[in-house]
Image (spheres, rainbow, N blue to C red):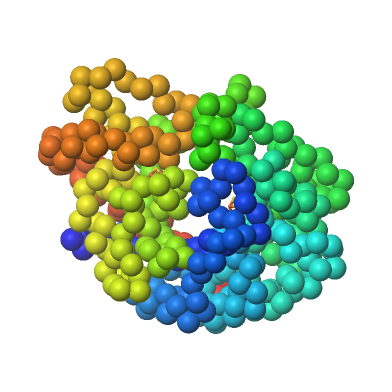
Length: 360
Ligand code: SF4
Ligand code: SF4
């Protein structure tokens, strides 16, 4: 099996399902009432295990829910992991950045602990809970502290708020217009997890298509989110990816980190041909394969997010049965393609590791 393994380059801790917001279409249905979280001790154990098992792990992503609700435990896990040489990224809705001063004080402490990068999430639904100005305070403080800063803006057919508002905000002018190399504005696709918005959000409008060409092209491709990260949720469940629909696909849960070693759970997935197939050819081709076998007409998925196609497959028992009965037909060709891809991946990962070591 060793010849199939692609070592991970990151550890992602989904530290809690508690959030100060309760966005209607949050993929993990986080809200202020949730209380589940990883303890500081457990987080440290997972960092130790991951780093000891794989020298390829360079990045720790701390996300949730809202990871800033951990309070000083957030500073402690950043310090602990940074001391081990990891690059640290946090993902937040920015609720704590109530004023420029407050944002600065909080971020200064995290930078002191070893934080390297911050990702803010915002958009129409987020702004029902967290004011837009918080994001601005957060971005400016982060950039002034020399943090790499990304802003992920919910993007769907219905979105009113878009990246353009950020680009034209005069408070960000000096960072945007001087091509600040540390600021990244991204349109993160926002998917329906709530029935009432499902219909409207199911397709992208023409305008949005122009803005998100890469996301739309993704459907045609393989799933590159697999085999990259060890991701652990607040229930200690190791999940195969952080895809938008992962919470709804039991198949992508790989086992409990508090019961089995992370290395075992991570590597066990390489015995699973379907994951290798997803990684190599992507869910769209797999769905097409199922429909041909069932003598069904193809489904038009060009407007779907790649993870929507994935859930379409896994919630249909008929497809799963067809895959179990017929995967042998593509087994050799997929494995051959996978081996070539894997070689390419390993080369890229080696280069990244060398680059990271130089920066340490
Ligand atoms: S801010 Fe993020 S984690 Fe919190 S409810 Fe909204 S989408 Fe979910
Ligand atoms: S396509 Fe499937 S396996 Fe890939 S990220 Fe999305 S949910 Fe995960």
